[in-house]
Length: 395
Image (cartoon, rainbow, N blue to C red):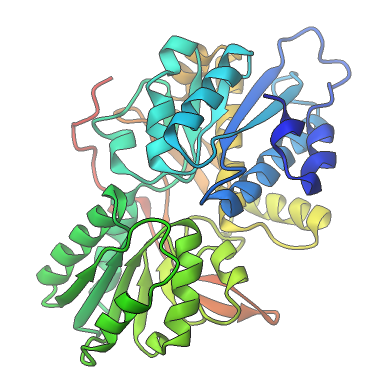
Protein backbone atom coordinates (compact mmCIF):
# COMPACT_ATOMS: atom_id res chain seq x y z
CA UNK A 1 0.00 0.00 0.00
CA UNK A 2 2.90 2.34 -0.72
CA UNK A 3 2.59 5.61 -2.53
CA UNK A 4 4.69 4.49 -5.48
CA UNK A 5 2.56 1.44 -6.10
CA UNK A 6 -0.56 3.42 -6.87
CA UNK A 7 0.61 6.76 -8.29
CA UNK A 8 0.67 7.60 -11.99
CA UNK A 9 4.26 7.77 -13.28
CA UNK A 10 4.04 11.57 -13.67
CA UNK A 11 3.65 11.99 -9.90
CA UNK A 12 6.30 9.58 -8.62
CA UNK A 13 8.97 12.24 -8.10
CA UNK A 14 6.66 14.41 -6.04
CA UNK A 15 5.51 11.45 -3.97
CA UNK A 16 9.09 10.60 -3.05
CA UNK A 17 9.76 14.20 -2.05
CA UNK A 18 6.60 14.30 0.04
CA UNK A 19 7.54 11.31 2.19
CA UNK A 20 11.18 12.17 2.92
CA UNK A 21 11.78 12.44 6.68
CA UNK A 22 12.21 15.92 8.15
CA UNK A 23 15.58 16.55 9.77
CA UNK A 24 15.37 17.52 13.43
CA UNK A 25 11.85 16.21 14.03
CA UNK A 26 12.80 12.72 15.22
CA UNK A 27 11.88 13.49 18.84
CA UNK A 28 8.14 13.68 18.04
CA UNK A 29 5.83 11.18 16.41
CA UNK A 30 5.36 12.07 12.73
CA UNK A 31 2.04 13.09 11.26
CA UNK A 32 1.13 10.09 9.13
CA UNK A 33 -1.37 11.00 6.43
CA UNK A 34 -3.18 8.28 4.49
CA UNK A 35 -5.03 9.32 1.34
CA UNK A 36 -7.75 7.10 -0.11
CA UNK A 37 -8.57 8.32 -3.60
CA UNK A 38 -9.45 7.16 -7.10
CA UNK A 39 -6.24 6.36 -8.95
CA UNK A 40 -8.36 4.20 -11.28
CA UNK A 41 -12.02 4.05 -12.22
CA UNK A 42 -14.67 6.64 -13.04
CA UNK A 43 -13.25 9.30 -10.67
CA UNK A 44 -9.59 8.85 -11.65
CA UNK A 45 -9.21 12.28 -13.30
CA UNK A 46 -10.27 13.94 -10.07
CA UNK A 47 -8.14 11.48 -8.14
CA UNK A 48 -4.97 12.62 -9.86
CA UNK A 49 -5.70 16.20 -8.78
CA UNK A 50 -6.35 15.06 -5.22
CA UNK A 51 -3.01 13.23 -5.10
CA UNK A 52 -1.15 16.27 -6.38
CA UNK A 53 -2.72 18.61 -3.83
CA UNK A 54 -2.16 16.31 -0.87
CA UNK A 55 1.47 15.77 -1.82
CA UNK A 56 1.93 19.53 -2.29
CA UNK A 57 0.51 20.19 1.19
CA UNK A 58 2.81 17.59 2.77
CA UNK A 59 5.87 18.81 0.92
CA UNK A 60 5.04 22.44 1.80
CA UNK A 61 4.62 21.60 5.49
CA UNK A 62 7.92 19.73 5.69
CA UNK A 63 9.78 22.58 3.98
CA UNK A 64 8.43 24.93 6.66
CA UNK A 65 9.53 22.75 9.57
CA UNK A 66 6.68 20.26 9.75
CA UNK A 67 3.46 20.48 11.76
CA UNK A 68 3.85 21.25 15.45
CA UNK A 69 7.50 20.32 15.03
CA UNK A 70 6.59 16.96 13.51
CA UNK A 71 7.59 15.55 10.13
CA UNK A 72 4.71 14.65 7.84
CA UNK A 73 4.64 11.29 6.07
CA UNK A 74 2.24 10.24 3.34
CA UNK A 75 0.88 7.11 1.72
CA UNK A 76 -1.74 7.03 -1.04
CA UNK A 77 -3.99 4.08 -1.87
CA UNK A 78 -6.36 3.42 -4.76
CA UNK A 79 -10.06 2.99 -3.96
CA UNK A 80 -10.66 1.92 -7.59
CA UNK A 81 -13.77 4.19 -7.49
CA UNK A 82 -15.70 1.52 -5.55
CA UNK A 83 -16.81 1.27 -1.89
CA UNK A 84 -15.39 -2.21 -1.29
CA UNK A 85 -11.94 -1.37 -2.61
CA UNK A 86 -12.00 1.94 -0.74
CA UNK A 87 -12.79 0.27 2.56
CA UNK A 88 -9.97 -2.27 2.07
CA UNK A 89 -7.48 0.43 1.08
CA UNK A 90 -8.39 2.63 4.05
CA UNK A 91 -8.11 -0.27 6.51
CA UNK A 92 -4.66 -1.19 5.19
CA UNK A 93 -3.46 2.41 5.47
CA UNK A 94 -4.83 2.79 8.99
CA UNK A 95 -3.45 -0.50 10.28
CA UNK A 96 -0.06 0.41 8.79
CA UNK A 97 -0.08 3.58 10.91
CA UNK A 98 -1.24 6.13 8.33
CA UNK A 99 -4.48 6.64 10.21
CA UNK A 100 -5.10 10.37 9.65
CA UNK A 101 -7.08 9.88 6.46
CA UNK A 102 -7.96 12.18 3.61
CA UNK A 103 -11.30 10.77 2.51
CA UNK A 104 -12.29 9.37 -0.90
CA UNK A 105 -14.04 11.35 -3.64
CA UNK A 106 -17.40 9.60 -3.90
CA UNK A 107 -19.85 9.81 -0.99
CA UNK A 108 -20.60 6.09 -1.15
CA UNK A 109 -16.92 5.25 -0.67
CA UNK A 110 -16.48 7.84 2.07
CA UNK A 111 -19.37 6.36 4.06
CA UNK A 112 -18.00 2.84 3.60
CA UNK A 113 -14.68 4.01 5.05
CA UNK A 114 -16.45 5.89 7.84
CA UNK A 115 -17.92 2.69 9.25
CA UNK A 116 -14.48 1.33 10.13
CA UNK A 117 -12.79 4.38 11.64
CA UNK A 118 -13.23 3.48 15.32
CA UNK A 119 -12.29 -0.15 14.73
CA UNK A 120 -9.11 0.80 12.86
CA UNK A 121 -8.25 3.65 15.27
CA UNK A 122 -8.42 6.19 12.43
CA UNK A 123 -10.13 9.46 11.52
CA UNK A 124 -10.89 11.02 8.14
CA UNK A 125 -11.50 14.46 6.65
CA UNK A 126 -13.93 14.63 3.75
CA UNK A 127 -13.08 17.02 0.93
CA UNK A 128 -15.23 16.22 -2.15
CA UNK A 129 -18.04 13.94 -0.97
CA UNK A 130 -21.20 16.03 -0.71
CA UNK A 131 -23.93 13.67 0.54
CA UNK A 132 -25.78 15.14 3.53
CA UNK A 133 -25.80 11.72 5.20
CA UNK A 134 -22.07 12.12 5.91
CA UNK A 135 -22.91 14.82 8.46
CA UNK A 136 -26.44 13.49 8.97
CA UNK A 137 -27.66 10.02 9.91
CA UNK A 138 -24.34 8.41 8.86
CA UNK A 139 -22.12 10.81 10.83
CA UNK A 140 -19.23 9.48 12.89
CA UNK A 141 -17.28 11.11 15.75
CA UNK A 142 -14.06 10.70 13.73
CA UNK A 143 -15.40 11.86 10.34
CA UNK A 144 -15.19 15.56 9.45
CA UNK A 145 -16.12 17.47 6.31
CA UNK A 146 -13.94 20.45 5.35
CA UNK A 147 -15.87 21.20 2.15
CA UNK A 148 -19.44 22.05 1.19
CA UNK A 149 -22.29 19.60 1.70
CA UNK A 150 -25.20 19.18 -0.68
CA UNK A 151 -27.49 21.10 1.67
CA UNK A 152 -25.04 24.03 1.74
CA UNK A 153 -24.84 24.12 -2.06
CA UNK A 154 -28.58 23.76 -2.48
CA UNK A 155 -29.38 26.49 0.06
CA UNK A 156 -27.18 28.79 -2.01
CA UNK A 157 -28.89 27.73 -5.25
CA UNK A 158 -32.27 28.47 -3.63
CA UNK A 159 -31.17 32.07 -3.00
CA UNK A 160 -29.60 32.51 -6.43
CA UNK A 161 -32.51 30.99 -8.36
CA UNK A 162 -34.78 33.79 -7.15
CA UNK A 163 -33.14 36.05 -9.74
CA UNK A 164 -32.92 33.49 -12.57
CA UNK A 165 -35.50 34.41 -15.25
CA UNK A 166 -35.91 30.96 -16.87
CA UNK A 167 -39.19 29.26 -16.04
CA UNK A 168 -39.31 25.80 -17.63
CA UNK A 169 -36.57 23.28 -16.87
CA UNK A 170 -35.34 19.83 -17.70
CA UNK A 171 -33.37 17.80 -15.15
CA UNK A 172 -30.55 15.40 -16.03
CA UNK A 173 -29.51 13.46 -12.93
CA UNK A 174 -27.24 10.48 -12.38
CA UNK A 175 -29.30 7.39 -11.59
CA UNK A 176 -28.16 6.86 -8.01
CA UNK A 177 -29.00 8.42 -4.69
CA UNK A 178 -27.03 11.67 -5.08
CA UNK A 179 -28.33 12.46 -8.58
CA UNK A 180 -31.91 11.71 -7.64
CA UNK A 181 -31.70 13.69 -4.39
CA UNK A 182 -30.32 16.67 -6.30
CA UNK A 183 -33.10 16.42 -8.88
CA UNK A 184 -35.79 16.16 -6.20
CA UNK A 185 -34.49 19.21 -4.35
CA UNK A 186 -34.30 21.27 -7.52
CA UNK A 187 -37.86 20.35 -8.47
CA UNK A 188 -39.14 21.37 -5.04
CA UNK A 189 -37.20 24.65 -5.13
CA UNK A 190 -38.36 25.43 -8.65
CA UNK A 191 -42.00 24.87 -7.67
CA UNK A 192 -41.70 27.32 -4.76
CA UNK A 193 -40.43 29.96 -7.20
CA UNK A 194 -43.18 29.37 -9.75
CA UNK A 195 -40.88 27.46 -12.10
CA UNK A 196 -41.69 24.13 -13.73
CA UNK A 197 -39.69 20.95 -14.23
CA UNK A 198 -41.16 19.61 -17.46
CA UNK A 199 -38.82 16.64 -17.89
CA UNK A 200 -36.55 14.56 -15.65
CA UNK A 201 -34.17 11.91 -17.00
CA UNK A 202 -31.79 9.70 -15.04
CA UNK A 203 -28.96 8.15 -17.09
CA UNK A 204 -27.10 5.33 -15.30
CA UNK A 205 -23.59 6.06 -14.02
CA UNK A 206 -21.13 5.21 -16.79
CA UNK A 207 -23.35 6.46 -19.63
CA UNK A 208 -21.31 7.38 -22.71
CA UNK A 209 -24.12 8.25 -25.14
CA UNK A 210 -26.43 11.00 -23.93
CA UNK A 211 -28.07 11.51 -27.32
CA UNK A 212 -31.38 9.82 -26.35
CA UNK A 213 -31.72 12.04 -23.28
CA UNK A 214 -30.74 15.19 -25.16
CA UNK A 215 -33.31 14.34 -27.84
CA UNK A 216 -36.02 14.28 -25.18
CA UNK A 217 -35.04 17.77 -24.06
CA UNK A 218 -34.91 19.13 -27.58
CA UNK A 219 -38.36 17.67 -28.26
CA UNK A 220 -39.71 20.34 -25.88
CA UNK A 221 -38.38 23.58 -27.39
CA UNK A 222 -39.99 25.76 -24.70
CA UNK A 223 -37.62 24.29 -22.08
CA UNK A 224 -35.26 27.19 -21.37
CA UNK A 225 -33.09 25.80 -18.58
CA UNK A 226 -31.40 22.52 -17.64
CA UNK A 227 -30.37 21.33 -14.17
CA UNK A 228 -27.50 18.83 -14.41
CA UNK A 229 -26.33 16.51 -11.61
CA UNK A 230 -23.89 13.99 -13.13
CA UNK A 231 -20.54 12.61 -11.98
CA UNK A 232 -17.01 11.81 -13.15
CA UNK A 233 -16.45 11.00 -16.79
CA UNK A 234 -20.20 11.19 -17.43
CA UNK A 235 -19.94 14.97 -16.98
CA UNK A 236 -17.35 15.18 -19.74
CA UNK A 237 -19.43 13.10 -22.12
CA UNK A 238 -22.58 15.10 -21.41
CA UNK A 239 -20.84 18.46 -21.78
CA UNK A 240 -19.41 17.55 -25.17
CA UNK A 241 -22.68 16.14 -26.48
CA UNK A 242 -24.82 18.97 -25.08
CA UNK A 243 -22.60 21.41 -26.98
CA UNK A 244 -22.60 19.29 -30.12
CA UNK A 245 -26.40 19.01 -30.17
CA UNK A 246 -27.02 22.69 -29.44
CA UNK A 247 -28.25 22.60 -25.85
CA UNK A 248 -25.91 25.39 -24.80
CA UNK A 249 -28.31 28.03 -26.10
CA UNK A 250 -30.32 27.26 -22.93
CA UNK A 251 -29.22 28.15 -19.41
CA UNK A 252 -27.34 25.12 -18.05
CA UNK A 253 -26.98 25.00 -14.27
CA UNK A 254 -24.68 22.34 -12.91
CA UNK A 255 -24.68 20.85 -9.44
CA UNK A 256 -21.01 19.88 -8.94
CA UNK A 257 -20.54 20.30 -12.70
CA UNK A 258 -18.30 23.27 -13.53
CA UNK A 259 -15.11 21.70 -12.23
CA UNK A 260 -11.75 22.38 -13.82
CA UNK A 261 -11.23 18.80 -14.96
CA UNK A 262 -14.50 18.96 -16.93
CA UNK A 263 -13.79 22.39 -18.40
CA UNK A 264 -10.26 21.38 -19.40
CA UNK A 265 -11.43 18.16 -21.09
CA UNK A 266 -14.24 19.63 -23.20
CA UNK A 267 -12.82 22.44 -25.32
CA UNK A 268 -15.29 25.33 -25.28
CA UNK A 269 -18.31 23.12 -24.54
CA UNK A 270 -18.79 24.43 -20.98
CA UNK A 271 -18.43 28.15 -21.77
CA UNK A 272 -21.27 30.06 -20.14
CA UNK A 273 -22.41 27.18 -17.91
CA UNK A 274 -23.38 28.14 -14.34
CA UNK A 275 -22.88 26.17 -11.15
CA UNK A 276 -21.57 25.95 -7.61
CA UNK A 277 -17.83 26.30 -7.05
CA UNK A 278 -16.20 24.34 -4.26
CA UNK A 279 -12.92 26.25 -4.37
CA UNK A 280 -11.46 29.01 -6.53
CA UNK A 281 -8.12 30.82 -6.73
CA UNK A 282 -10.32 33.96 -6.76
CA UNK A 283 -11.10 33.56 -3.03
CA UNK A 284 -9.65 36.68 -1.39
CA UNK A 285 -8.02 35.55 1.87
CA UNK A 286 -4.38 35.65 3.07
CA UNK A 287 -4.16 31.85 3.35
CA UNK A 288 -5.51 31.39 -0.18
CA UNK A 289 -3.17 34.00 -1.65
CA UNK A 290 -0.20 32.17 -0.11
CA UNK A 291 -1.44 28.80 -1.38
CA UNK A 292 -2.06 30.08 -4.91
CA UNK A 293 1.32 31.82 -5.17
CA UNK A 294 3.31 28.80 -3.96
CA UNK A 295 1.30 26.35 -6.05
CA UNK A 296 1.73 28.52 -9.14
CA UNK A 297 5.47 28.75 -8.55
CA UNK A 298 5.68 24.96 -8.56
CA UNK A 299 3.25 24.07 -11.34
CA UNK A 300 3.01 27.19 -13.49
CA UNK A 301 -0.77 27.44 -13.03
CA UNK A 302 -3.36 28.13 -10.36
CA UNK A 303 -4.83 25.24 -8.33
CA UNK A 304 -8.02 23.58 -9.51
CA UNK A 305 -11.19 23.24 -7.46
CA UNK A 306 -10.39 19.62 -6.57
CA UNK A 307 -6.85 20.57 -5.60
CA UNK A 308 -8.01 23.45 -3.40
CA UNK A 309 -10.52 21.30 -1.54
CA UNK A 310 -8.07 18.43 -1.03
CA UNK A 311 -5.43 20.90 0.19
CA UNK A 312 -7.94 22.31 2.67
CA UNK A 313 -8.64 18.81 4.01
CA UNK A 314 -4.94 18.24 4.73
CA UNK A 315 -4.72 21.65 6.40
CA UNK A 316 -7.67 20.63 8.61
CA UNK A 317 -5.76 17.56 9.75
CA UNK A 318 -2.72 19.74 10.43
CA UNK A 319 -4.83 22.17 12.47
CA UNK A 320 -6.24 19.27 14.49
CA UNK A 321 -2.75 17.97 15.24
CA UNK A 322 -1.62 21.42 16.39
CA UNK A 323 -4.71 21.93 18.55
CA UNK A 324 -4.41 18.46 20.10
CA UNK A 325 -0.64 18.44 20.49
CA UNK A 326 -0.97 14.84 19.37
CA UNK A 327 -1.22 12.66 16.26
CA UNK A 328 -3.61 10.15 17.82
CA UNK A 329 -6.85 10.10 15.80
CA UNK A 330 -9.02 10.25 18.91
CA UNK A 331 -7.16 13.33 20.20
CA UNK A 332 -7.18 15.07 16.81
CA UNK A 333 -10.91 14.40 16.43
CA UNK A 334 -11.72 15.76 19.86
CA UNK A 335 -9.65 18.90 19.23
CA UNK A 336 -11.29 19.63 15.88
CA UNK A 337 -14.90 19.34 17.03
CA UNK A 338 -16.20 22.88 17.59
CA UNK A 339 -12.82 24.47 16.74
CA UNK A 340 -12.46 27.73 14.80
CA UNK A 341 -9.31 28.03 12.70
CA UNK A 342 -7.90 29.80 9.66
CA UNK A 343 -8.49 28.20 6.27
CA UNK A 344 -8.01 29.16 2.64
CA UNK A 345 -11.66 30.27 2.80
CA UNK A 346 -11.02 32.52 5.82
CA UNK A 347 -11.73 31.75 9.48
CA UNK A 348 -14.14 28.82 9.75
CA UNK A 349 -15.74 26.74 12.50
CA UNK A 350 -16.04 22.97 12.54
CA UNK A 351 -19.61 22.66 13.78
CA UNK A 352 -19.66 20.47 16.89
CA UNK A 353 -23.12 19.03 16.24
CA UNK A 354 -22.19 17.23 13.02
CA UNK A 355 -18.49 17.86 12.20
CA UNK A 356 -19.34 20.11 9.21
CA UNK A 357 -16.99 23.02 8.48
CA UNK A 358 -19.06 26.17 8.01
CA UNK A 359 -17.89 27.99 4.87
CA UNK A 360 -19.00 30.67 2.43
CA UNK A 361 -20.59 29.29 -0.75
CA UNK A 362 -19.95 30.39 -4.32
CA UNK A 363 -21.90 30.60 -7.58
CA UNK A 364 -19.83 30.85 -10.74
CA UNK A 365 -19.80 30.69 -14.50
CA UNK A 366 -17.27 29.28 -16.95
CA UNK A 367 -15.44 32.15 -18.65
CA UNK A 368 -12.14 32.84 -20.38
CA UNK A 369 -9.43 34.16 -18.04
CA UNK A 370 -6.09 35.05 -19.67
CA UNK A 371 -7.23 33.18 -22.75
CA UNK A 372 -8.22 29.98 -20.94
CA UNK A 373 -11.64 28.82 -19.78
CA UNK A 374 -12.17 28.21 -16.07
CA UNK A 375 -14.93 28.59 -13.47
CA UNK A 376 -15.08 32.19 -12.21
CA UNK A 377 -16.82 33.21 -8.98
CA UNK A 378 -19.75 35.50 -9.72
CA UNK A 379 -21.39 35.70 -6.31
CA UNK A 380 -20.45 34.64 -2.80
CA UNK A 381 -22.93 33.87 -0.03
CA UNK A 382 -21.96 34.11 3.62
CA UNK A 383 -22.16 31.29 6.17
CA UNK A 384 -25.42 32.73 7.48
CA UNK A 385 -27.38 30.87 4.76
CA UNK A 386 -25.92 27.50 5.79
CA UNK A 387 -28.79 25.30 7.03
CA UNK A 388 -28.82 24.44 10.73
CA UNK A 389 -28.04 20.85 11.75
CA UNK A 390 -30.97 18.53 11.09
CA UNK A 391 -30.62 16.66 14.35
CA UNK A 392 -30.08 13.38 12.50
CA UNK A 393 -26.41 13.20 13.51
CA UNK A 394 -26.03 11.30 16.78
CA UNK A 395 -22.45 11.09 18.06
